[in-house]
Image 1: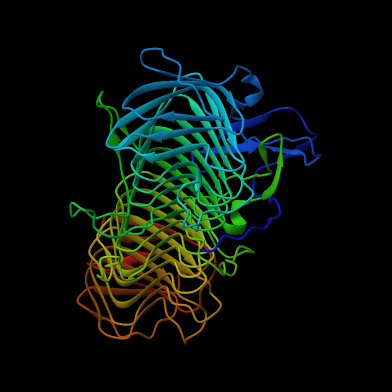
Image 2: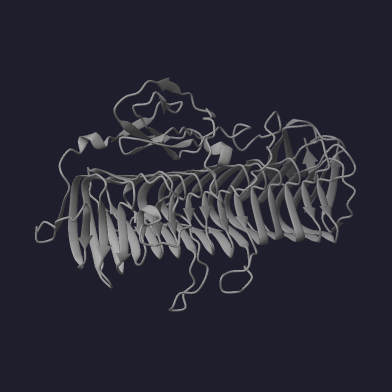
Length: 587
């Protein structure tokens, strides 16, 4: 996506805020989101210009502050090796050319740490540094097998890329494309301290190979990508990461095979608390995205929490002015309340999805596949939330473009599709709540084998171009009562052999709560159809019809000893039909 250097007005969303005058320091607040239980990293950045600060607390006042103030770093910059030898800089450039451990501290203006240690492993401990540069990358790895930036506990560190030129597409690889840039070699971040990375026109972190982050607290503010690893990005264990990006939040760009024949282009989110506010895509993988768990050396397992806001919903505002070697930044973002009050509601009272963005602004995007096996994911997007493309990979093979959800909790709100797979979309387990969407879940083939899926959509709630197969789980589909919208719609076949399905249809006969252009076959499970339908259904189940169950409000269906409760946010014409193993009672 071509970077748009614009300013989007600050949006208040659901959290109250207060504007103050200028002060001397920036602050980062980790705020617990009362709706999702997730943490949100907010910033307020000050300069000598009278732009004001933005601050906010959640409804419970749960705010803890991490002070971001590089004025506290007054000592001169020092770089030492493991033998306590001081490495002298030349014209502000401090060069590391040998393997080993190093310690950096103090303030370095218009300077750089330059690593040129072919086939070597280098560790640099940041112990209270502030490094800025207005002409080259402040941290530049020219050559190494691996460079680890260890962020020491109880220290806060600052990296400023103050260049006024965008070098993201430059063929000159000697000046760097990010505040922290690795031309050759893996980049790793560890430790339990805090690092703030600011890039005026380029990316925050960019490694041409792999980027790996664990345990540290990291705030990235970048006009381009927040974190980019051409080949792979891995986030694991327990970091806290906040990203404000004018392009993509986290990205990989290479879907080719490595020299050893390994597939590249992965993004792994296996732990941590991650908040992304991006003008473009939140997470964009050239090959695949995997969201699951990680376990540390002590046997502790970590589950990720990911909040993503894109385009206008990100409340993204970034300017290109600098004051005192700092980017001038205004940003406010807060987690919106999910409409409908949780899992028993939803609806369309003034909350219809807007038009999607002109350019890609998805929460999580990949080509080959997206797998979610664990975690808490909240997305509020001006495009699709989860999306796979069946594009041709760098290997010359057409991507499978599958999405599989086998665990975790996903709460989604989208201006376009909430979940879209060009290939197969499979739900095996987990809890999915789609509060608002154009189409809820869409794929070439949709397989629902378990879990709980609740969908509110302004068009079709569930739509497949080939087939829909349901063997288990709960599917609760709601569409607007006005318009040509289907609750469950397949251009091919629908086959239901198990599970519980509740589907609603519009107040006109041109559409249906459940519709298939091909065969619609139901051999098991319980299917509750709210509203008029004209589709021919092949079934061996018992049919019960009633005038009850179609009005707005709460209803129950009793089949034997099983009671199914559901709620309609609107009233629907027609009757309620239940297909089950025996006669049902509808109230």
